[in-house]
Image 1 (cartoon, rainbow, N blue to C red):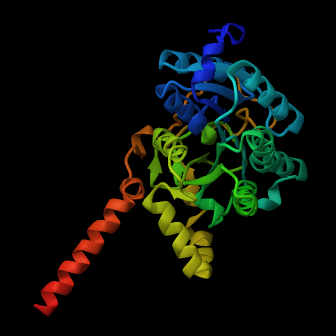
Image 2: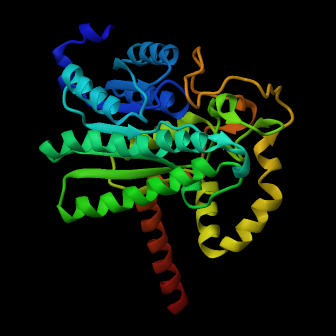
Image 3: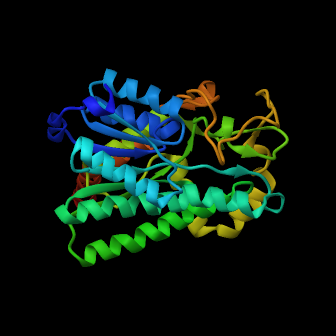
Length: 338
């Protein structure tokens, strides 16, 4: 379905905006919302990936609006938001997911590379949130989901731009959340902290590493992240930690940050590189321009990635778990005193 032929009936559907929707977690998230029948505005730079994502959304029962957008351009994001509401109706959900990075020791990067990665990953989230709030505030309703990472708490070597951006997103989000609470706003703001994901970023990010970049194991499939993002739009949670590795990383860093520094100094370099995959150091990167073609949702690590997480099950069922724990405690007290 073309953008111009989308009927006004879409106003009865939930309207969702997903940035970085052409590949990886964004692509999987667009599919997940489509299965709910949502009207999905797809924002990304890569036209090939956007076109393929739109086809998938419509095949799965949703409606798609392709909006080629560089989220580092605030005016372009605002224009995309206006177009989304013009065609699809009032935005109910906005998912800030777009990112890019540079895999390299900090001293080998130049200022323009660092600026660009920060503008896309951090300021892209800020601009998306601005555009969403400008519309949601008039209705005092809506959900904004910031796609975060365990690296928003524990930075690792060779990814200074990405780690810095995710830390910044968490700080920005916490500040804004307090403002919304002060206003008694009906707008909900949540952050989904992801573990290592099997996405195409490792195949097209800019890198100066001697071998192919890889996510730090354990590795999870992007569909798991998409499930958590969609779930977050239906439930009131301040933050969601998707996998046990995310929880462990966050808590170990709170308790033993110095130990984490030393461990990563020894293990964090080789752990982010794979000698098993072919690697061309002159491959094109998506830092400034999209890489042509459709990369899909998955990266090169399907053989090592899982789509399951016990931590995610515990997150979804924490009320039941709490009741079971309380019941067990009562039984133990009664048994002790009987």
